[in-house]
Amino acid sequence: MIFPGLIMLIVMVVLIGVGIGAGLFACAIAAGMVMLGVVSSSVALGFFTKRPATAMRALLLQCGVLAGIPAGAVTAWVGRTVLEKVDESWMIAVYGGVGGAFAGALLALMLDFILRRTHAWVEERLKQRPVAD
Image (cartoon, rainbow, N blue to C red; front, side, top):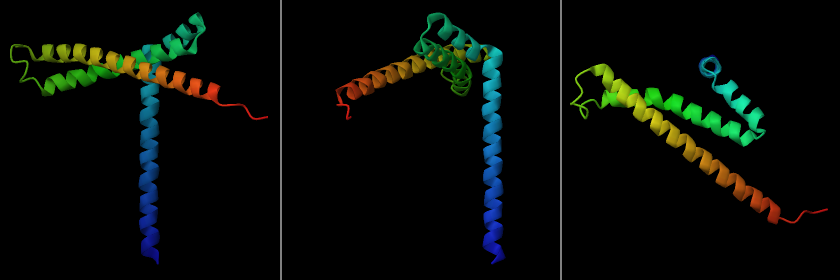
């Protein structure tokens, strides 16, 4: 009887630890975005244009570029056999970072396009539905 309870206690402690770790990771990412000015610049852009969609687009674009730079650098470093012409190893990371930033920006713009189209479609569907009194 004590054995299943002990297993459930261990599972519970592990899950709580994973939750705390994920929360700390999310807080670190949010703090980094605040330090880099991503959140404040998006909010300021939303206030200046008086359109929340513009602020969301700016946030998506900045997050895509920031996520794409290290992803591209690591990908280029792993695939450095393709870039055999480059002698300096640090240039591989620069080329990968530029490629990753471009890919992140494209991904953010595609996500923005999908969200806009989905919003327009849902809005149109809700307009067609008759309102019941």
